[in-house]
Image 1: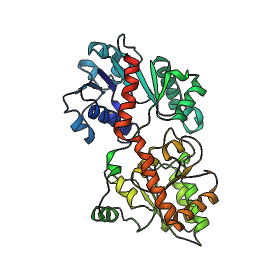
Image 2 (image 1 turned 30 degrees about the vertical axis):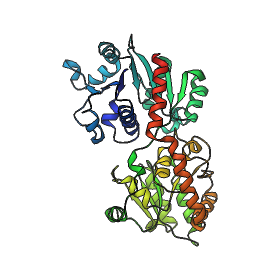
Image 3 (image 1 turned 135 degrees about the horizontal axis):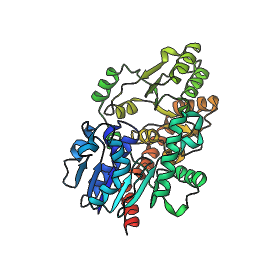
Image 4 (image 1 turned 90 degrees about the vertical axis):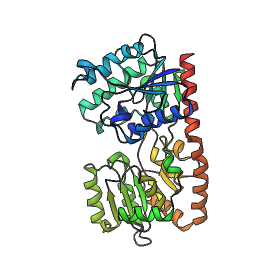
Amino acid sequence: MKIGFDAKRAFLNRTGLGNYSRFIIRTLTEFFPDNQYMLYTPRADKVHPELLSLIEEESVKVKTPAGTMAMRGLSAVWRSYSLGKVADQDGLQLLHGLSNELPLAKSKKAKQIVTIHDLLFLRYPHLYNLVDLGIYRQKTEFACKRADRIVAVSRQTAQDLIDFYKIPTDKIDVVYQGCHPSFRVEYDSYVLDRTASKYKLPQDFILNVGTMEPRKNALLILQAMAQLKSKIQLPLVLVGKATKYKEELVAYARKENLLDQVHFLHNVTFEDLPKLYQLSRMFIYPSVFEGFGIPILEALCSRVPVITSKGSCFDEAGGPHSIYINPNDPEELADAILRVINNPTMATKMIIDGVAHSLGFEDERVAQNLMDVYRKVVG
C-alpha cells in the first residue's frame, strides 16, 4: 500500500501533535515495512532527531514544496491546496491527516483519513481567542466531512464527534495512541541519580506533567498539599510550558507557605522525562478534560501510581487500577495522596496492574489497529 501523511507536525512540533505524528510514522514503518510511506511537510530543514533514522528507511520518502511553492508563505498554500494533486501524482492509495485537518483541495484517487484528537475548542470556547477558535472550528468540521473515515484517539473523542458534529458512528474508528518505548525502559540508579542532580530534584516528590494552564488544574494539587501540610510534606514537581496560570500557582503556594516545596521545570528534555517519572513517588493529573491524556499512560509505563480525574477519557488511559478523584475537590485528592503514601501494598498493586493495563497500548497493537482501518478504507 502507498500511504501519505500530512507530516508537518512530525517535523515541526516538538511535543503533543508532533509526538503523536512521529509515533504513528515510527510504528507503521517498523511493523509494516512493505508499504511505501510519503511524508509531506512544508519544511524539512529542521528534522526531529527521531525522524532522522526513519527518513533513511527505504520505505520512507520525504516531499516538500518545489519551485515557487517553496517560497516563504507559499508552503502553507501548497499544504492546503496542492497536496491532494501531489498525492495523485505520487500514486497514493491513502492520505492520512494526523492532526485534525485535511487538504482543502481533494485528491481524486486517494482515500482520506483524519485523526481527531479532541474537540476542546467546542467544549471550552472561552479558552481560545476568536481567531484561533474560528480556524479550529472550520478546519476540524471540514476535515470530518471530507474524510472517508475518522480516527478518534479515545472513546470520549468519538462521542464528542457524534454529539457536536453528528458524525455517524460507523464512520469513526477508535485507535488509541501509545507512548514512546523509552517510558518502558527501567533506568538504573546511576542514571536516575544523575537526572535528579541535573534538575535539582527533591529526594521524594509528586509529579505533574503538562502545560501550566487552568484546564490542567495543577492548583488542585497545591490545595491538597495545603490540607496535608500538618501531616506530610511531599514536594511537587511541575514539568511543562509556563503560561500566566503559573503566576496563580506561585501566588497560592506563597500564601500557603508551600513555595519551597514546589519545583517548576520548563526545560526538561524528552530524553529525561521518563527518568523523572521513575524518580517520582506518584503521578497526579487532575485535568478537567482531555482528548486522551498521554501523560497518564507515560506514568503507567514508567511504573508509577496514578491519581487522575473522574470523567472524560481518563479511565481509558488510566485503566481500572488508578485512583480517580473529583477535579474540583482538594479534600478528595488529599485523601488519595495519603492512601498511596500510607498503603505501600496498594501502591505496589497499582504499579503492577497499571503496567498490565499499559500493554494494551503497545506499539504493535496500535499499528495493527490503524492498519486495519487503512485496509477497511482502501478495500
